[in-house]
Length: 431
Image 1 (cartoon, rainbow, N blue to C red):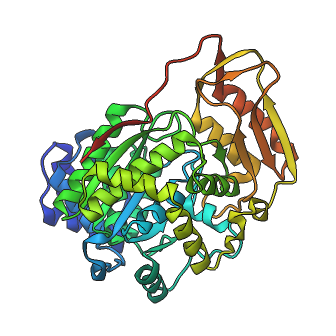
Image 2 (cartoon, rainbow, N blue to C red):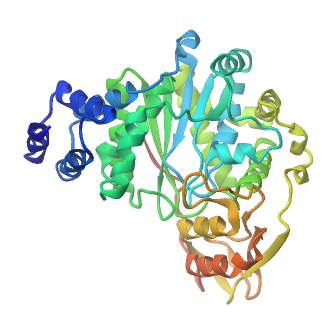
Image 3 (tube, rainbow, N blue to C red):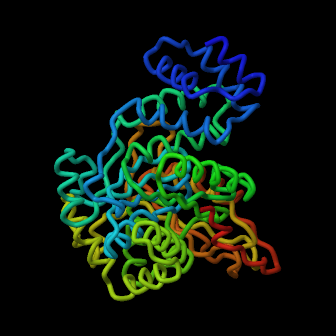
């Protein structure tokens, strides 16, 4: 282990055997934390080659269970987001891709900090089960082309152990370490095709487009070297996606998109992701895939697949026509504009923190959340506002937290007399 640390410290390339020795030894407990910490810091400063990063990814993937989706051939497709605010895209793109012949057998996570988790959103639906036995999971995928469950603790355990150490040694934001962490779980999940939604901006881990593109390239390279087809879409997270931030609120908004009358930005990003998923899984040109995805929304195919999915996993789909069945927060309040003008910028991370304070998120794993809590934005960047007009509606069961949430929103939302230049929703695609 000493030799491996020294070699990476000096900027030299490690062999596959050395990387596997490192991961296997640390997972077993033979390599102590202090030596792994030194190695992680060496990687932070010296980086890794695409081959090294791929070997690290595969070693972490092989440390635990893997899902065998080979019976579905090349049609399996997964979508992963690097984390954002108001990001309910899985609820929309999963049934959209499945309605058009893709096979979506997906494992998702819970939210932590200012970012929301797909599993939490799904669990806000009465009766919905995010845990299925393996045979039931595969049978559902076989029959309707779609299942989404919570991520197994036995999936890439080496990554879980290494990430916990990165978190306390200031080595989280290293591109090879981020890329291998994300891709080890995606490869273990078994999909042949993977679309990555790499968020960029104030509410994302990557604040600059250049950083996001570097991460996207690293993950796409891992996929290519591992025999998977991967595309990464760089999307804007300076502003929350859609208007809803909070679990049940986001489920309602996802239904609006599937019904054909959702927010333009959320709809556009979901169509982009679904088109990329279909282009990989079905081998069709992107333009044709986009046209098919637009038609599936317009004709109600995706909404019908969504309803079938909810019912199959034990949920009550009656909320689709009666959203009040998802429940309502006992306390509501408004956040108003202090002056006339235009919303000139938003800090998505601070808006996410405001929603978390209201009960929609958790500070640490295992904390309970309030499915009805959250924020509905009434104005977003570029839109006009009047003094005293509502910028956001707040929902909570913790009345004592309203002032703290408002304090976050005061810092997050900027108003100016001039209308700002519009921002792109998609910064680019790495394939």
